Figure (tube, rainbow, N blue to C red):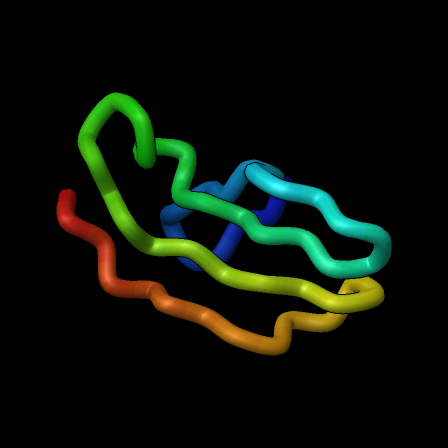
Length: 51
């Protein structure tokens, strides 16, 4: 789990060293915020939450 500000992100898809993390409210509230890490470093981030 990754926490950024008041939001939590859970691992959604893992491929070798690259991981897609989605907001923990992705399923329940349809939030589309997500981020990608490669070797534990954030490489891309959409931090626009719908809640």
